[in-house]
Length: 172
Image (cartoon, rainbow, N blue to C red):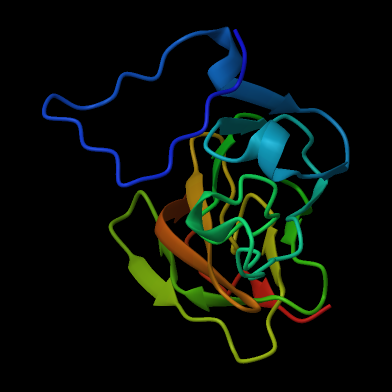
């Protein structure tokens, strides 16, 4: 089926159903993600020490000639990446291009009931999961969305860690 583009807004009174084998992508090696291949899909992380690099955020405007229907505009604000840790992390990183930064929070919970939220510093551009103190055991989930120039929002996230919890955020 060909790609279809809408000039919004698009309304659905009964929701959207996303199904089928193309809705998941297994990441089995270091991968530079793209909007076309990875955004909006469930990314199954199957590389315990993988490095998964998010695309550079592009906030370009529509051309003055095409207006709001400039379908060739590479702007990727709103693109979301849904990571599901299928193979437990040992040294797994989600990275930006080094210019884009993380905002929001990562919540790490432990089976003994401990829970802590971590907030990135102004220069943090890496999320590291180690399967222990920094989360990343199988079943962990993290969602990242391009929200502004140089800002990726980490949200709706839950990473499970060991009894000692440490921040997964770092600067490259």
